[in-house]
Length: 194
Image (cartoon, rainbow, N blue to C red; front, side, top):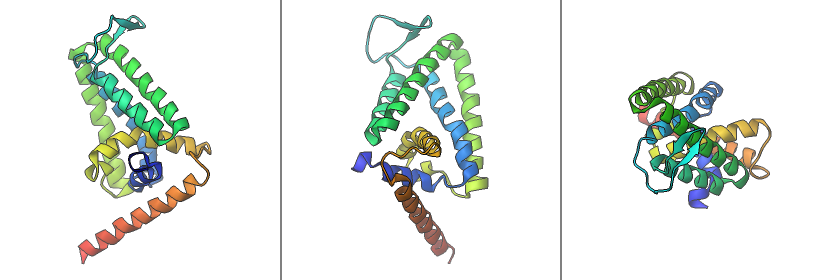
């Protein structure tokens, strides 16, 4: 289990995203953060030299953005094959369309668009945590896990609204773990106030 323990990862992230308004805010803004980060990654040097591969007349560059996409996609498939394949396809789609978008904009405009989008998306999420969740974001406790899990968490939340479960009893088991983690956090905060 360990690295690919879906219940553990989902419960960790879910314990920081339990309020429905905060979940909705994250649903709207997590994937745009990933997408716009890939726009910026388009301008990193290629890792692998291929002859030009074009999509809609724009070059796809196998660079850091592609590597990031592969890591995210493989991690999601390792967590849950069915939802993971969908997540990997979404990541790959983000990489392709971010590449096209970056190619059209050029670096001098792309970084400004990315900066504006990142500021808007991150501000909304911090408002979601501060106003609705009343808890600091997960990235303060586990930066890598929070960044890696965020898009998949949002995808799974949507799929679970459509009654998807990675395996029978997943939703019930993960909700119990989330409640336990939230209670642990509350107890820890009570001790700090005394």
